[in-house]
Length: 464
Ligand SMILES: Cc1cc2nc3c(=O)[nH]c(=O)nc-3n(C[C@H](O)[C@H](O)[C@H](O)COP(=O)(O)OP(=O)(O)OC[C@H]3O[C@@H](n4cnc5c(N)ncnc54)[C@H](O)[C@@H]3O)c2cc1C
Image 1 (tube, rainbow, N blue to C red):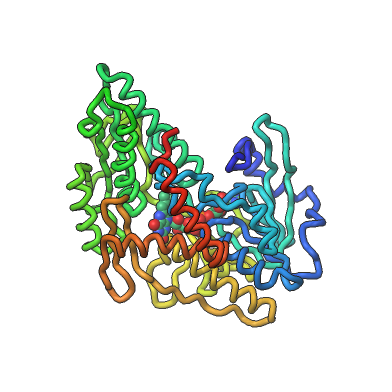
Image 2: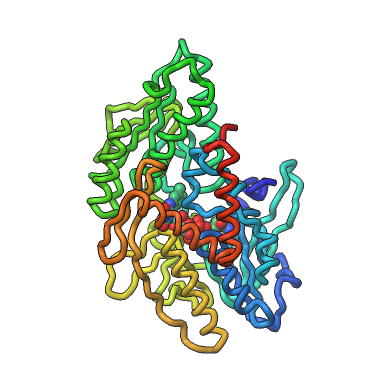
């Protein structure tokens, strides 16, 4: 099954720019909701949106609320797993949640499609048409009504317009991109093994742009996976000598958003593994042959991953006048309501939420999206009861970084430092918490046991 609605990106930019005119001619889809109920529409079924739809559906879906989740994909995968998909440690289809089945089990509706605009006056969202692989339309453009709208569309990596980055670097924003990187990595290993006498500069070299948690964790995963691929009968060349992984970071150190001690411990481990770390230098261009650093330096590389910085999807800046920040995030108040519209809320990576007394917006992390999803359940309950929305309180439970099987470091609430197996277990528990929110405790426990057994029967990494 396709993970993404095929052809959605066939919609020409010009049509997208003229959304309002196009969609205002289309009547609202009549069977969309029971009009006697308060209609909650959640756009984006990611880390936060899926948890919110599940909880609202379970709690209010029987006759009190009409809950609809709209996502452009047919399946959900928890984004922090994407670097494992990229390295082959995990198969994207394996951990995916099928929205259709999940929705019917949890009393919410799921509608596939890419949301491209909003009419705030009529309280309607515009959903782009979807097409099959042959370009035939599956679902026409639709207009869905709402009483409460929650935008939970996440973020994309931000290449800051760096020349060549969009063309030659792969970002890890979607399961497709992660799977594409994985195929390219396997191909690179097979090609190098076949061309053993004529290797070119940069062959089997990988540059990861950005040393945040994503870049650093990916680097460690790739270090392990590329060697593992090579250990499966690829014996024409000495992969150990030829594989080179370089992390490039414009800031002064790796893991700039995490405590210094964690960054130092991670850097020590990566250097011990033989990875190269270049901090304090900017990538100025990405080409087919590699990456230009600053004015003069060029690092040849067959594989380039862009993991530096994020921005929210561009269409948020055209949501009928809603305020956004310079990286397209919707500006929300302390209840998570979009500034200027009492019916629109936002959560997770696409929300800019600066809580009272704080100077900076909450970090774009899974734990932020998770806590905000919890909070919006209370907000919707308050709206149903005709009460004022409560303020959101954020609790920073700490940070964790997991470097494949080599090590893990964490700094938990109260400054507690953990590492090794304990850090890895806490790291894994974050995913389990998401699964529990989405599937409930029993199913999560059963799936975990099943996964432990299945792991023994298949190779540690995907080899195709
Ligand atoms: C490789 C990687 C590793 C990460 N590791 C960690 C980690 O270890 N710890 C941590 O805390 N955070 C981590 N993060 C960040 C974390 O994944 C995000 O903060 C979190 O997923 C944000 O949740 P969200 O609900 O806001 O958005 P997302 O989980 O990104 O979900 C957004 C959803 O919206 C859908 N969507 C987007 N646009 C549209 C549209 N126009 N119409 C319909 N649907 C749309 C998408 O299909 C997606 O399902 C990582 C991120 C990446 C990429």
